[in-house]
Length: 151
Image 1: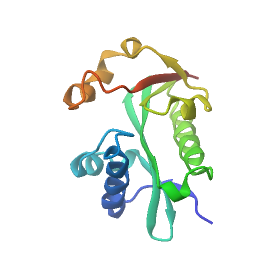
Image 2: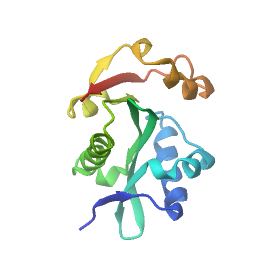
Image 3: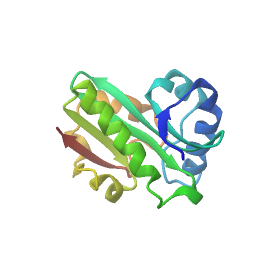
């Protein structure tokens, strides 16, 4: 039985391929290999054997704020609870670190609402959140929805 675990450096090419598969379909934003390598400690993965079939990242923004991002589940593993396990792992880590607020930017808000995140206007997010957005080719009209949860 597979479980969610922290990603390893050798997982980076598979994480990159998984995320950019969905980015190519305009279902999420792309990530570069260098971005994933630099932030590998943020990532959780779900494997089938040696294959990474799902991933999610929890990025610490500041002492009081973290972001869940890069959530991707291979099509054949969707609707089987894999995404739920990844989000639960992220939320558990947020709680264990004592971070009072978590947010995400997504094209799939209904999925995140199941975990107590609520939609807000993107402009309500702190300015430090926008650093990555400014570098995005879709800025300022990416169409992602902002959700937030306070613990």
